[in-house]
Amino acid sequence: MIDVLDRGEDAWGARRDIERLLEKQQQLESATKEHADETRGRTEEELTDEQRQQKNELTSRQEGLAQAAEDLVDDLRERARDAAEEKPDLAEALEEAAKQAEQEELQEEMEQAAEELDENQSGKAQASQQRAMETLQSMLKQLEKTEKARLEQLSREIASLIESIKGLIAVQEEALLAFGQAQVRGDYAGLDAGLIQLSRNTYSVADFALETDPQFETVARRLSDAGGAQENAVRHLRNEPILADRVLTQEETSLTLLQEALALAEQLQEQNEQDKAEQARQELQKAYEELLMRQLKLIERSAEFVGAVSGKGKLSRREKADARKFATEQTEIQVDAATLLTQTAELAESVVFSATHQQLDSQAQAVVDAYRRGIVDGTVLMREMEVGFLLEALARALADSNADDSEFDEEQGGDGGGGGGGGGGGGGPQPLIPPVAQLKLLKGLQETIYRSTRMLSETAEALEADAKDGRATELGEAQETLVNLAEQVLREMQQGQGGGGGPPPQVPPPGDGPEDGN
Image (cartoon, rainbow, N blue to C red; front, side):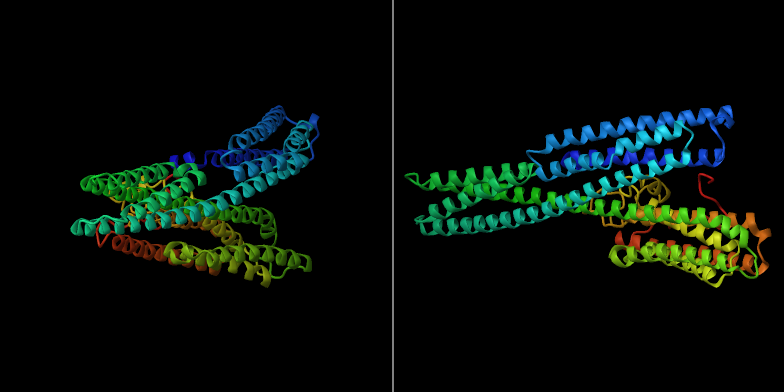
């Protein structure tokens, strides 16, 4: 991650500042909702001392976020000024983000929320907070789009640089071959012209590297040194008498420097590919998080409805209409999740991620079918919850996949156990779905089974026997599938290590809960 900061500190820092402010506003909005639920219908005078203190604390926190929003805009503009000369596209994006915050009145919305909290208008405060969050999310998306375009442009520039250096190396190798033949003949006529042209081309590529991106500087230095060695070779060729040994030394030095420049450029290419994969992974994680938030809102709205109609033989016309609305909402989430899978080849190729999507799709479809048939019982809410658990597991599996695999190293005996470079410690760029992400998702699936099993146990008395037994059977089958997935992941990891052994990924037995006990 340090390398990423060195290459794009302004963009990364700006994104992180916006993300932190968004996270704090989301937390405060959640706390505001809880306060609103507790105090709904009460006037200021009717609040308890504890509720009044809580209201004051929420107001103070919101005022602090409003000040943070003002500081954020100032910081964005300062970063834009700093980046203007070397990264004009980034500078423009940062300035646009600052303008968006002002045009959509980010600070004012947060200040309005603080005033509404102070006046005990929690419902209105939530609406203001929601508008502020939407602005921050939009700012993030715009910066991410700019960073993605920057990485794509950099990828093209590195590819062009590598192609040019390879061409220089080919010409230098031919020049060395020609020099060897000239030594045999004792005739060096015309060799200097080819080296002069090679030197010009080498300096031209060095200038391209320097002018294109600051991180090409080390490559440019090697190229410039190679051009200097080529000039020295020309000088020795024109000496009377010709200093053949020195010509050879300088040409060999040139070739070595060109090869070093190529190696450095290829390292930049590898890191750029890693950065692109990391950005794609973050975008995918956020997509899962957004689906999760939509699922949680569905659960929140449908819970009361399910409780009211659960076990009813027949729904009323209005209840059927409500059920159809919930079915439509669940279908939209189901389709969007499926689209992520079909549009992201790496997800489909990952045995654990594709299996998780299948499980998610199955549970979502069962929810939709129940609502559409008007046969609603407690298992509908359980399935909605399981869809949420699975989305949460998918998002968490992608979070910091490169940096958070030490726990798996220890569980697998300390050797990493991640064929394909799950720890990011070499072996080329990480794929979009690194091995450690599959391991984390296996763990998330086990937690999902545990939480679903506990939920079934806690509500078993309210369910019909058939519904309860059917749900228990499903969870048992899910546990068997999980064990099979773990074994398949082990085989893939062993193949990636060249057939190396090692213990399988650890899957807790049925009934064991997550390590944190949640």
